Amino acid sequence: MNLQITQVQTDILVTIPYFSLTDTLDCGQAFRWTAQPDNSFTGIACGKFLHVAQHGDTVIFYDTTPSDFDEIWRPYFDLDTDYDAIRKALSFQPTIRTAMEHAGGIRILRQEPWETLCSFIISQNNNIPRIKGILSRLCEHFGEELASGVYDFPTAQTLAACTVDDLSPLRAGFRAKYLIDAAQKVSSGEVNFTRIQNASLQDGEAELTQIFGVGTKVAQCVLLFGFHKLDAFPVDVWVKRILAHYFPRGFPKRAKRYGGVAQQYLFHYERMLEKNRLD
DNA sequence: AGCCAGGGTCTGC
DNA sequence: GCAGACCATGGC
Image 1 (cartoon, rainbow, N blue to C red):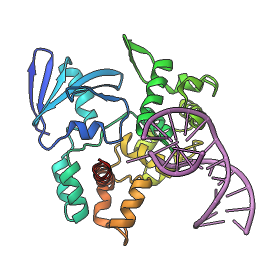
Image 2 (image 1 turned 180 degrees about the horizontal axis):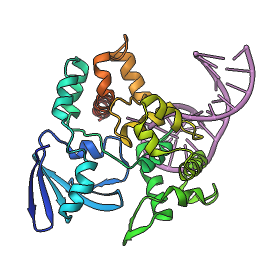
Image 3 (image 1 turned 120 degrees about the vertical axis):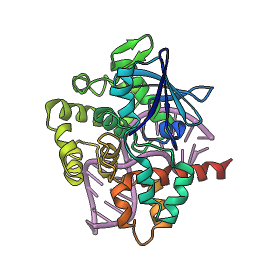
Image 4 (image 1 turned 90 degrees about the vertical axis):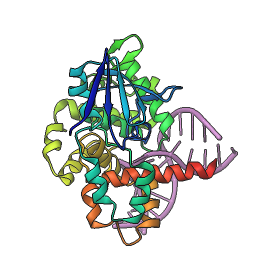
């Protein structure tokens, strides 16, 4: 991707057309970003703290270095994927096109597989504010303190050594035992992220669902948000409703290549409609 | 009070 | 295969 990048002291400014920072960080794919009163975001990913803001087409990465930008944030925000081409490929379908007009600035983040796996284990039968709370407490209690009050995501090895009782401060409920099983299977190599990255969608799901508490929906979320498999297609209660309502004859074959991206546009659009309806 | 939240497991038919 | 109970917790 040819990005227009400017460096001002320790801030890096990047021109990203057709991008929405808010929608990308607040659409239920990542749970460790916090919106600030000025609409900027702070968060921790890949072992680094970031303060980021958007003004028009310009995204400002505060207080970072060119190497961190190139090695961490540029891939994390998926800035080298041609979303214009993806949107064009999806625009043949009227409902997806409408959703794109409202949510087309979303990018599928390249999150770390382990954090993504834990996040969506926590997400089951849960709501987004509480998912964020549980993950925040998970990091505070078991993650390395990178700076004052800034905690990294704990490793699988750390959690594999924990008991359900150890996790009680998280108030994760019945999901605590799922986290521990995931940690044990990941740290032992029984579930192998390199193998999943190189596997087909179907084989990747089969490997992930060996974890107690991981079913099809959670596995597809991990494949989409943690392994950047854009054809992964998580079906939750919202998407189920969308499919029944807008796609009674099935999701179009032509859209399946980027099904996960379309799913995310539709999910965010539908939730936005619901929010407006309640206001 | 009762329902729901980016589900999964287990049981019973 | 598929419906239904159950699972912890918290907000409304």
